[in-house]
Length: 282
Image (cartoon, rainbow, N blue to C red):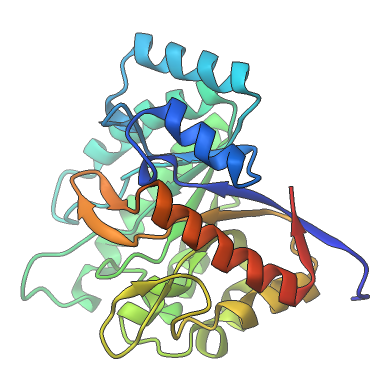
């Protein structure tokens, strides 16, 4: 690919900034983002937003000129032994949110397992459940973006590849998270997983981690090979979303948290890497 200008669309997990979506939007816009990844609003997870809350959120985002890059759902972040239809029903609720907020992208996971249960023993059950979720996504014309969360089935590059190829659905694609790979012992995520997963990769989540401690740090300050991954994506012609998920403060009930100041720190670190790689954002 030539060195012509490459532009990605910047987004971020709004509830890592603040519970109030108006504050989320203000901070993201100050950082140059015109999209938000929605995991919760007013402290309510997307699965549990009622009709009034959803309508209020949709109106507020539209009035602010903000798009939604994806719905950061918790689908699949449950034990694999549970009734699989429970997650299908929860996915239907999340799809309602996606439609209302004008996005067709929904983050999902590939199931936890009980203590002492081997990951290999859960494979068939995981595939059945992910196929059920993909079938619902195909019907509703949305795309599931599997995140390589630690301690789920798809937490290493090899198992992520197994998952996406075995399910074999156009509605199941991948979100790449360098920090999560580092935290499960994939010490060089780009070198160990990028080439095999790139054909299915549709979304970039931005955070980094230190291999020795597992601690999350701003992009480029850890072992996640974030700059190398950015450069490879640029060279491959990637023009999608880059969504900031810094996790720089203590986690709370709804997921990772950073606060406005640390979120800004993470955004500036990522901007430095993008500049080095020759990628701009909008």
